[in-house]
Length: 399
Ligand code: ATP
Image (cartoon, rainbow, N blue to C red; front, side, top):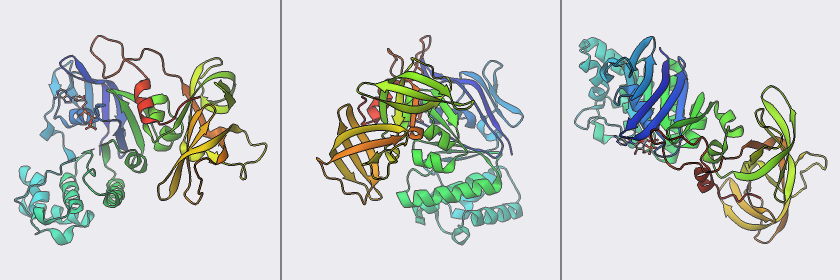
């Protein structure tokens, strides 16, 4: 097994910077996911680790070996990096059986027949495809083809697995099932895994750590729950779902622990307590994020002394989503998105109150004005927190 280390890695296409000064360490046996909107540089990053793309600057190491160092002109070709790869288009050979598909990486490496037979059988068993060895590849379902692709990536016991949207062609149910199966295999074999997806829930459920990227840069690295609950900035907050993003000013600030502070904030027409990372300061402009599932409608389950933010409003819109019902409440400071239980049958025009407990309201520094759109161009300053992307994703209107 092996770790993967990227140090100040960039990739330019002409004067377009697709990946900018990326620093990342994937530890041995760890499952790390690159997550971000289309075009943010996920695939380019993965391809650089794979050796399918050369980094313009920086250094990439796999295990103890430097596989690419732009400054020193080092570049180890893909086939010598001992990587397992699974890509979106499974790329299994249609003219071969399942057995021959999985055997292919071993045949290329000129392993003896007996070893190939044993390794293929073992790997097919791992992905629960042992009964399909002689089946022609085209006579398989999408999920089965996917498993063959995974088996082919695993068969030569690579140090590192690289996967680019490997489940994206599957239907929702199979995607969940395959994701879980794959994660179980990865854990069992302890393989260092770098995974690319733009699917938030897939990243949340599979990963040890998630790397949120935007416009070629890392926005935040952390455990899935930390990224979701405690985003570092508005871009990360807005990437997941349709959060309410409320602009405010910090009027009081006290330390909770080494990592968080308790704030009193005042926005246009409302005020209340919330929490933030400890770099937030008194007087600072912030964006308060409230996840729709953390907001509650009505007051029956709300203790009178419970600390939080409150609004009065009127139901403007509801959408039944199966397990939940999305409710939009029009307040005098704007619209508020709430995910309520589907059992609650709110009707448009209902007068309601909205309550958000203090610990569910998380503030991040407000975006800086004049932030550039699009990827960085060489020689120009880059934007750390794009407001446009956040606003486009959120149906919220701030107060
Ligand atoms: P998606 O989720 O849509 O696959 P991504 O995050 O994987 O997107 P990349 O494929 O890494 O994004 O592309 C990052 C940026 O680099 C995009 O703007 C893309 O158009 C650009 N890009 C990628 N490859 C090339 C290339 N060979 N020449 C020029 N630009 C490129």
